[in-house]
Image (cartoon, rainbow, N blue to C red; front, side):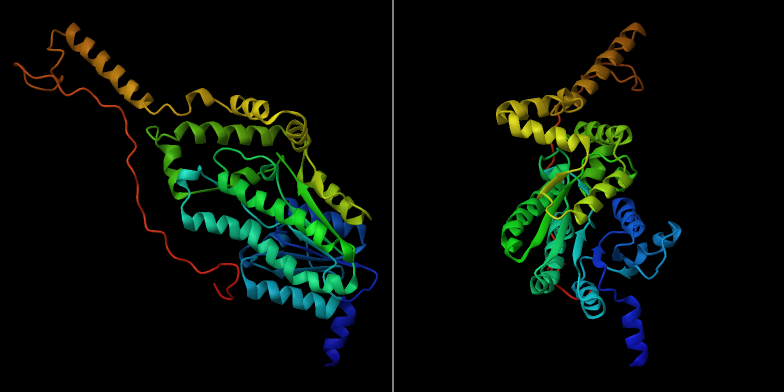
Length: 369
């Protein structure tokens, strides 16, 4: 009992606000933890999945008086409840919640199955909502608090090949805006951080759906040019972006210390730019500009480009056989003699694929995995 009291006193500091950051072992989350530590004004709870905890030590971030490092899979109700309970019992509750954990799934609507779709929504939308529900009672009791949800430019405008990612961020934006109104009477601040292209390696961590992984490699797939145009474009824009995780972390830290932060905070140049386009341009013009700005969009939808390529090769082979004095309708390796010409090559028709969706319990609400 005595050791428990000593430990509680060691970690408790009524002068410091408690900040819980999810997905804090890499990228923007890690940069934010480092930025908040420098100020010395906060007690930070940095969380990550068990398999990612080693990244903190790799980055030179270790536990100290102002920092806890805790395991948290945001899809686990047990782990969510455990971290909130510990923070409440030992630190008086979470004062600032930063929902940063998430991932990006790349796939056109037609090539995202039910299991993949639900996992994306669970991670990027339902898990943040569950954490918010967990910390709100204590915030309302204290009549203060701050909830920060890391959204994306993908939450203000959808991008092709990232349909379900955009859907998850649109949902997060909608719920967060409603939350802003709901908790304002208790002096609880709510913010949406909207980053766009970030100069980091995060684009390398994008996950592909089962079908999109095949499409990228198959030139005969109708979505081949969608993926092979968008992926290099996004990678190039990220490499050219002047925005880094460290610069964005500074803006988030500023919003935490701000007494009256705005609901939406664009934190990269492209986020500002696209926000202005949507605000001032008529939607018909806006969507036309966005569509014709897509990389190599003139190749998209060429369902018979592979048929044309095959037909061209057949004609060239026929000309070659004529030069060699062979029957143009006869394959080069076939024996001489009268032969019938082969059937003309038919244009490509997509073959419908069927699969059985695995029924699944609610990932976010169950206790074990």
